[in-house]
Length: 114
Image (tube, rainbow, N blue to C red; front, side, top):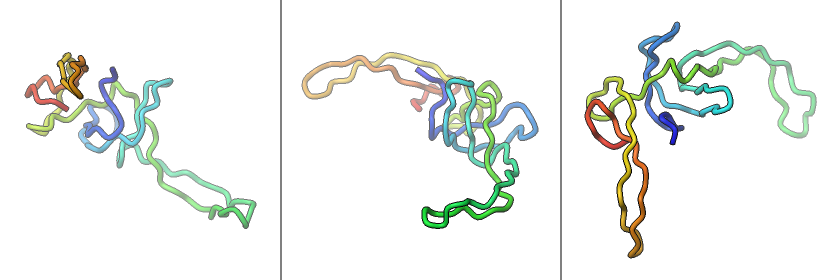
């Protein structure tokens, strides 16, 4: 089970954007990187698209979020708003008359489920 998933609120703990918080837009598991909203913004120079019929792109300078290494971000505790480590525990859930064991992520700082 992953410590950080899409939609989690994280804080940057290292790099030029240290201290900024944002939501995870995507997780790139093959390169151990995450794209965080409003963090590591870079300018991308784009050319004008060739085909006019299928939604031609306009040229210019776009600002996009670049991936940041997953070790440079940490989850924000939902209770305190400070950074926290992620723990995993197994809970039994009864669904449709059957008991299942599911893994749950929780914030180690407060013990609250994520």
